[in-house]
Image (cartoon, rainbow, N blue to C red; front, side):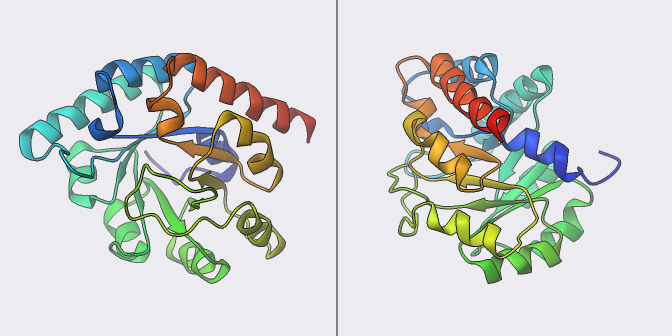
Length: 223
């Protein structure tokens, strides 16, 4: 990547953002990724956390396989939290939370790769912008069981707060988002949705993604 991704392109990447690790899948993760990409997923985040998560060489091989699938599909591959792994893989970017290494330090280490930062308040959003974030992850919007360390759900009010405060960065909403909730989230100011179980736990991964992509397109075309 020769330069920072521009906001318009970043918004396109965020529209249907799959966050996935082996612990989230009830079937073979590579198949879930394949079906999600076929359905129209626009960006994928490798998040290998939780009980029974892979580690060491097994985790590295899993990440490399997912990255290869993303590259073949022309979709950005983002690593959650682990700067060393992101650099080792030459990933397209990294996503960090408030309890991880500082955004400014990660920006310095990652160069022009994509940097996403989870924020929960307008003040945190402003700090992330100053540190060089390319997009903000806002949530949890609704209650979620996919993350054991998730904070209390705030509803779409937090998205309205961000936009009312003039936060200019692309925003992706996460936390308990289902196809039925996509419209509400997008209309509240999100540029896209980040999902885990709504896709990984769906009877048909591809259809779940296609349905969400359709809802997102409906809202963006109407605005």
